[in-house]
Image (tube, rainbow, N blue to C red; front, side, top):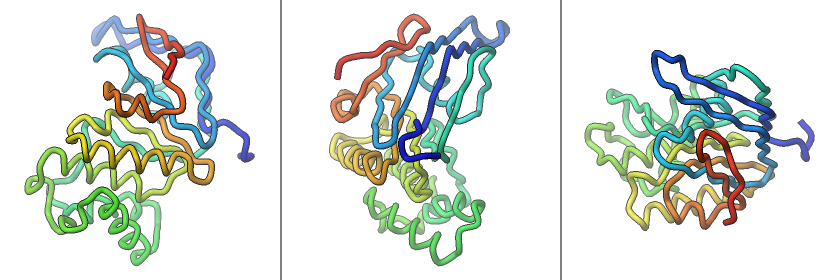
Amino acid sequence: MTIDAPLVELTDVTFRYPKTQSSFTLFVPTFVVQPGEILAITGRSGAGKTTLLHLIAGLLAPQQGTVTTGAPWAHIPQELALFDVLTALENVTLPLHVAGVDESMRVARARLALASVGLDRHERQRPPQLSGGQCQRVAIARALAQQSPLLLADEPTAQLDSTSAKNVMDLIHEIGHEGKRGAIVTTHDPLVVARADRVLEIRDGTIHERDT
């Protein structure tokens, strides 16, 4: 990938859930995220924001059109997907272990990521011992520790108080603009929208450009 190549590009993408699940259809005529860009995706609940992220991540395949991802990505899902039997530190290091990162390096990166979201004193606690907002921050730390060029964040501030939400957006802002990395963030949060470089809205099954 050259430095100027898009991190993500969708062209004439159409996705429909099977009729047995939903009559929902999402159409994306064009969608491009450049290196160093933070993009916010807005829209009402059920509009297709999470579906769009899943298409970008390759978790769903479109019936028509093309999805090109030019960089590895890390994902902050709504469902968090933390393992209750693992500590916060172990939850953050797990993807690094799978990726083959050296043990000392993955522990150092995980501890740095947990500290960046204010959880350095909670690394030995397991998800059932943490609040919902703290679990959200563990999931964010897990994505940050992967240091991927592209961050996909699904409602990352939804369970956070205003101070924690601001701190998380500061991190996403810094990471998204560092070294030509980028971030795509779905949100209902005005704070996230205000910090984005560009805002798209999913409305009536189609994605539209919106003024920030």
